[in-house]
Length: 168
Image 1 (cartoon, rainbow, N blue to C red):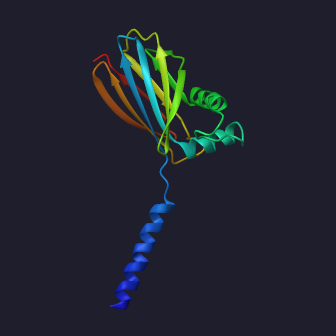
Image 2: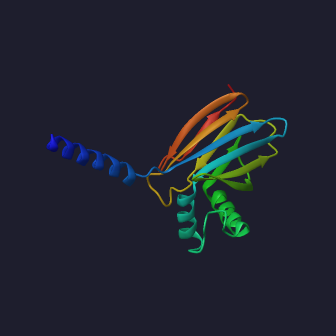
Image 3: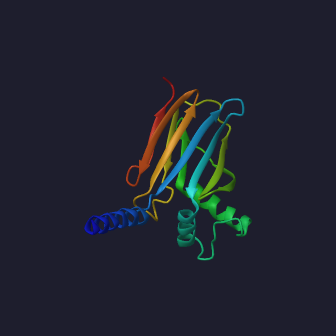
């Protein structure tokens, strides 16, 4: 009986530590077209510790991603990073992202972005390399809701671009 308890304890310890060691690198981005406002509204969720690590590597060792940080400086870094890592092309024309701000939600930083002046959409090209420069295991999930058509895709390092057709 004692051997069974010891074996069960060792197995449990192995399973628990293997889950703690494994880290998932995932961002989730929602892109919705608001026809009345002629805009694409984009919400990106990133783990705050992953974002902090990449901002420290790229811009400044002093960056802290939390509510106690200098929010104006942090917004500047986040805006710069997102503009470098997310490219949106509508009907063959690359669009400019407008970073609106962020909020904190548990372990995530939720970033709000908008692209205005979108009168119609036939094709939407998305390139999202967020955090891929820091984590090769990074996966970026994209959910779109364009003209009532919902599509989802998963972008990975080496395959971080997709074209969606909404003219059908």
